[in-house]
Structure formats: C-alpha cells, structure tokens
Length: 107
Image (cartoon, rainbow, N blue to C red; front, top):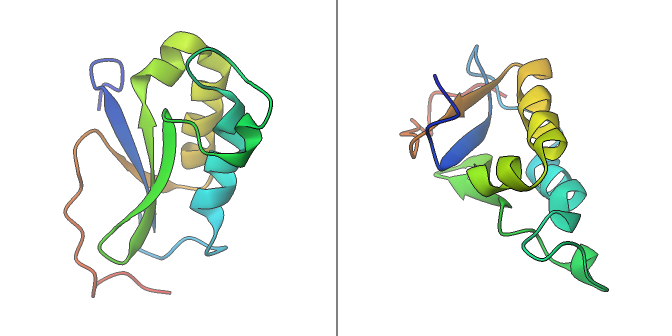
C-alpha cells in the first residue's frame, strides 16, 4: 500500500493474524497523544479534544484510528509515530474504509 497517495489511513485494532489488539482503549490513547497536532497548531485547551487529523472510531465492533494525510503535511514526525505504532504492534492498516467481519477476530 502506498500511504502517500491516500487522504486517510485506517489503523485497525486487529493484528495481521486477526487478533484484537489490547488494551481496549488503545485508539483513544493514540489519538490523545496526537491531539496537539491540529490546524493552527496547539492552542490552550486543545489537549481536551482530538485532532481532526487523528480520530478514534470503530468499524463494526473493531476499534480504529483514522489518520488524515494533513497530519503528515503538518508534522511528518507525528505521522511517522502513528505509522510506527501500527507497524510495531503488527496492526492492519487500510487506505479505504475497511470491511471487517465482526465475528472473525479473536480476543
């Protein structure tokens, strides 16, 4: 997958082997760390809301984080952090909204 051509990447809370990634709040934690990276830069109180460039959500019953390419354009090290997080934890990454079989992942 060529992540440079996609506007959004989906980091799924599933390993490549199909196991659910733990801890269960990993998506909120990752997005919380990225909260300072936003249009206009960090502002007072910006740590209280997620960045529009790194948003935790779910696809079916699977937690995921949507990482927008504007994060890479604004701060490449923050983008690299997210991509390294996914790689280091062997998480699935997709450049389109993934179709997940909510019954097939293993705890």
